[in-house]
Image (cartoon, rainbow, N blue to C red; front, side, top):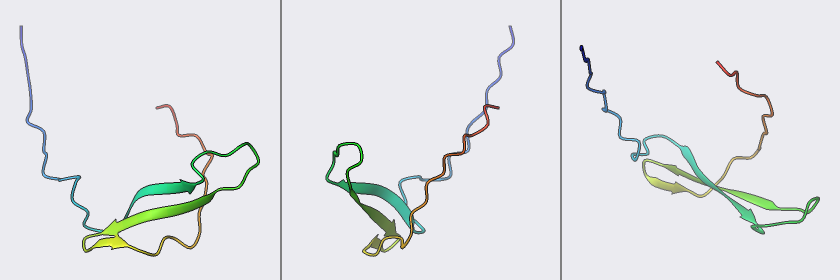
Length: 68
């Protein structure tokens, strides 16, 4: 029997925010009936902390990713 292994390169700390990133999206209200309106607010952060202004525009991509 022959076994082989490698040591993963874990140099990146994913918990560190070094550039602006979208952390979460808040929906108000949290639940709505079909056809109802919601207000979405982005929670953004950068290396200095929370950025108060969210993006000016939203986009929705419905394209499916390839299976392979």
